[in-house]
Amino acid sequence: MYELTHVTKHYTRGKDTIRALDDVTLTIPDGDRLVIQGPTGGGKSTLLQMLGALDRPTSGEVVLDGTDLTKLSEARLTGVRSENIGFVFQSFNLIPTLTAQENVETALVPLGIKAKERRELAAEALHSVGLGERRAHLPSEMSGGQQQRVAIARALVKRPKVLLADEPTGNLDESTRDEIMDVLERLWKEQGLTFIMVTHDSALAKKAPRLATLRKGRITVKENAGT
Image (cartoon, rainbow, N blue to C red; front, top):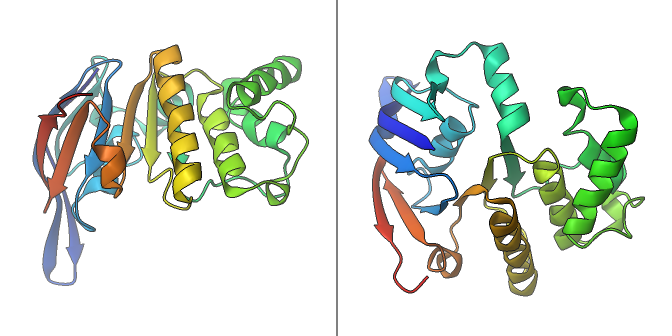
């Protein structure tokens, strides 16, 4: 479970102070599926960085499973990210010179998992996203949707508790978007993930059980009816 209490994040730009997050208090239960929406510059990506232990707030607490991430050393934060949090980005972020299999295995290297087990786990993860036969392909040999499936497999191969997705369908056409969301929603259910996604796509936001809206750093959360 995430518990954010009075979280603020301020940036200085010249003589101006930008309030990316302004007194955000939010609880995200285990197994939740939360979509975050809002205008550009409203604080969405900043909030995701806080949840992913990629940045620290100016003030406030970001607690994950009873541990305040704001008080951890950089080394311990790296450990939290490596073990507990999977990331999926709009731009896929695959290493172009590595095969799909090798790209997925990169998520397991920091965990000290031996090569044979890494290969087995990566193959299983690729199979789970429908790419069992594309393990030896380079990113350049795959479509955008297939590359995003590899990125999802890489994020989930270590079986994290949390999946954070920043515009995961932003570079995809509508049909491929729906395929990728089907994969993400299926894996969310199968693996019992806490799934938090930033998107500009209102059609996707309407399907989420909970919707958080960020405007000028302030957050409101509502339950979506009929989901």
